[in-house]
Length: 227
Figure 1: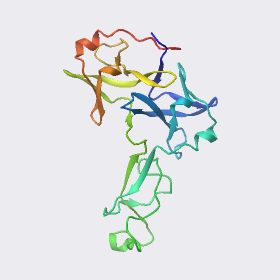
Figure 2 (figure 1 turned 135 degrees about the vertical axis):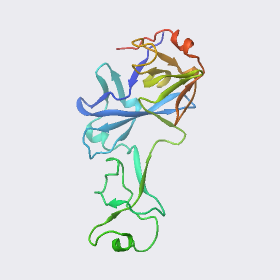
Figure 3 (figure 1 turned 30 degrees about the vertical axis):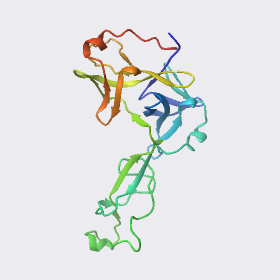
Figure 4 (figure 1 turned 90 degrees about the vertical axis):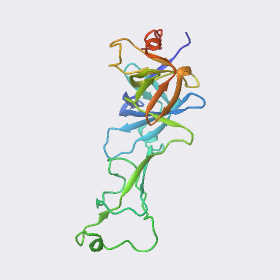
């Protein structure tokens, strides 16, 4: 079997040998069946998750090593962005710039209407207290690509089969060869990897495959380089 690499969602990440954060989720081109980016969440609670091109990431048994410095990592595009919702009521106190309601993301500093913001007193807030506008946070991933998170449900044709652990890819083009199931699937400790050719969809409901549970149970093991 050709050499493969395993990207486990939730792995620790290092930038040029220094601790950097962890893999929050991964981004896939579903048309080309290629892994394109890792989304890395820094350990610093006030720092934003970043979109890291997969060609800079080298996975191993102890985590993922990025071929860049922490300073270069901080220059990558933020993975999420927060927008004010037009017409929505303010919801509370304004947070510091750069922190969203979820603790991460990029605040867009403009109101969704022209002119002056309404007086806090008119919307039920005490004088001197700034209302927090209602916001929504979205993933900033390339158009046409999809995010895959650890723990997403994997559905066989005859029911749920397990949860996503990560992806197995083939270098040098990072073509996805298998979806790796997390521990706790139907067969306990057996390592289960589903061929990408049998994946028929990835959406908000999880990963759908064209196989039945018994067919998945009989899949051969996958050898992963360096693991």
